[in-house]
Image (tube, rainbow, N blue to C red; front, top):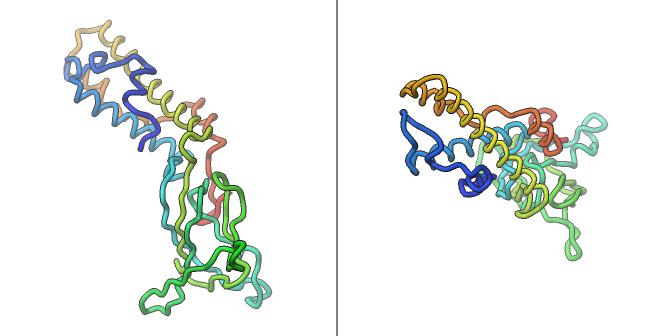
Length: 236
């Protein structure tokens, strides 16, 4: 899903398919819907790229991490970093499965599910942090051995629907789409005032790739949601 919709944009801006031109004529409803979808998708991509996430909406993730093995005391003990795995797509709503491939390479994978510590199970790991915000996995036994992509995590990432954080991000997206349309409308009216609209002028207005530039105000408001990675796996 996108952070905003055509209906929300039209209600917020009062724009419709007759307000913009394509090839020197008013857009059809189908052309307007296609163009607005392009703008909305461009804004979604700009927000996700700036913040370093796949999406802030709730989504399922299957992720593979490298086991570190023992790196402390010259490979004879576990450092705290050996025991921890940080899911990349933060915030984390729920971690549903952690498994380690104990198979030999070359050879078929042999995924062994590790158990979460609970009231009924001593388990192999615990989940640290707060659901819906930053979370990570900490092993206290059966720590994954050293390997490449030998730890698999299944989890739900993003903010829950109707959470204040997701509502805020959706409002930012809506305003970014609106700002783009207001800017294009202003350009269109400026050209119309200076010359008789031509096919080239109209297409110049509408061919701009939408949603790829983010204004400073949007960046400032999104900074609190930005995920900064250290290397390929770590997150802060």
